[in-house]
Length: 79
Image (cartoon, rainbow, N blue to C red; front, top):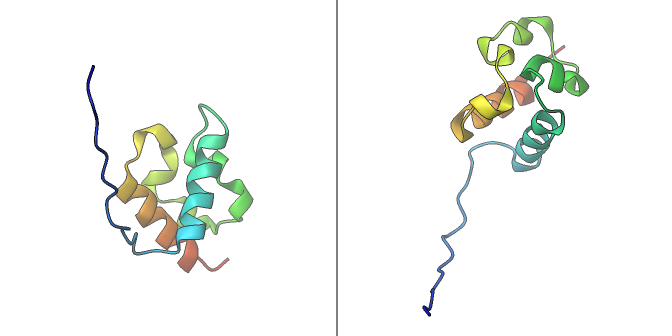
């Protein structure tokens, strides 16, 4: 037997629009084995943004920092 004590970490700001961040992550992982380019079609991204190398990867290959960067790029994208 053992006792575990859990302490909640203070809230951490992501440095980007959190609603958009969660939407990007959820959409990216919604369809298995798809590249980011195909998974994020719903966002109607500009062709210029889609040329970024991050769109050739699968979501499971990206880290939190990559998703934050991607969210910022999507937020600033103008079609």
